[in-house]
Figure (cartoon, rainbow, N blue to C red):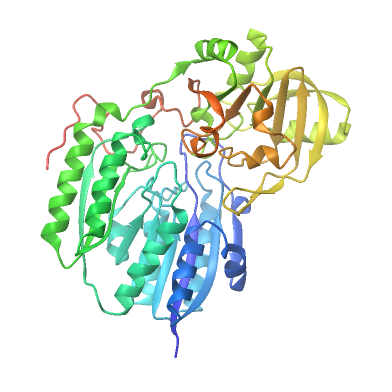
Length: 487
């Protein structure tokens, strides 16, 4: 008889400084067999796990529910309670299983719940009992004690930008199989580091953070290694557990896990000054773009929908208009009223719309733009990893040298397909604005002559001292000069 493995997913990265709440309707939800058909063949954790289970041949996958949303503001209480209760009910209805794999992001936050994933894992453990339970996590997870206690093994990403979703699912699945086969006894070491990090040194291929990850990979590949990672948290999920962590799980080797966790944590702390972002003032960035040959990419990390911002910043747009920047420019923005006006006017019509500040209205004031309606779309497209993006109704507006991709709802503006799906090829422009701190590099470094991290306002600004932290661990670097750490 086949061994039954339950699978569930819940993913969203929350920026608590974004005033636009995330609603239940913002989540893509798949139930039962649709989870399998939706995720098989994609470059996701679920697909990676499915392939490992299938290759083994002994397992029946029991899909329950998968829900994910674009990063955004805190999840409205009613919606979060509904999501959690629906997943728990789906698991309860399929609780006759031998093991469980839960795919999480780890940095969710609700209006009233600072640890949704810990709450979910704790409740799932109560439902499922003492069976092997493994969860995968983004390395931007806000790690909590409830999460560590509820799961047998937590498996975080090893890359930033994140290119190992599929491989992380495979690692999680292999660990789950080892647990099922009775081959391992997990022992966990966790070292908490009072530190928030940003900046280019987090790029795992080139930066100092990559050295820490490689230390983790060496531990994971050792005879007793099961899982190891540095979980740096999402700096914009301002909840009580927010800080960095080293998390190592070994096979019945607690001293080995603790020794290496402390060593890696000390390395992170010793390099803390390097783990801060270097930002370029907007006017200086525009001057650099004027002088550059080839494609220039502006990283608007402060309004990064990939990090949970509202996506409605017009700060760079205003700067370019004021500067009378002459080069071909491509800018994304979330603005439902502008989309409605364009749909009312129709293709080829000229419209005057107020752009920006419709969601994060405390930071951004609308700017009036007269533009031609180039095209209208339903907003559905495929990201590079094969999953579906849903921007709501979407329009392309052209105002002089500036082309604007305007969506009703936030989408990830990280890869190129978000533009290409609507007839906009980034390589046809001189300047492209992305709403991502570093994830975009996977898709743009090969075609860009210059990449500039622009210092503008926003709820996910890498200028951490500009944000109103109230709940995270204190004292903490770089917010507090008196922050200290020792192992």
